[in-house]
Image (cartoon, rainbow, N blue to C red):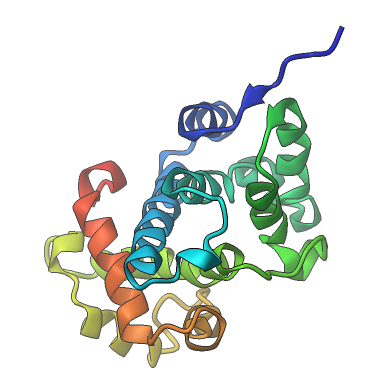
Length: 203
């Protein structure tokens, strides 16, 4: 008898994330990347780039963000297993090929499974570090709130190596080449999306 697989959608993705990741701050990072990817999807659509989105929906893009780091709590001590573990979990789900590919492209520098290729894959690659960087900027604001953060204050911090030292700025700024978007626009979309969901993100 053939096993009926769950369809991977927003609901089942959230359930999987919550099952596998207990740390609230790690979850919030996944929420943030999902929220921001949805915002980029909507921006690309508005800009007439729908042909680059293929058959995927805004929900699909958010699913990729939600799950991209879902195995991190389990794999953080062995980066060679990061994403590999997630892909094993996904064998129990019915997953769109483009979503599976996008998740496979995450952590490619370590796993070598799939280099980013599609617009979704490169947007994930560029915005993953950015969401964390924006949170870092919010945390040095007087009230530690996303609403206090401006695009200029984010970009200025790029040139301060001591600030959020672990963040690879080049991974963010490659948005100009990889997704054909100016850095201030790329930052603005992510920041506004995160500000609209500040309650969910705890900031």
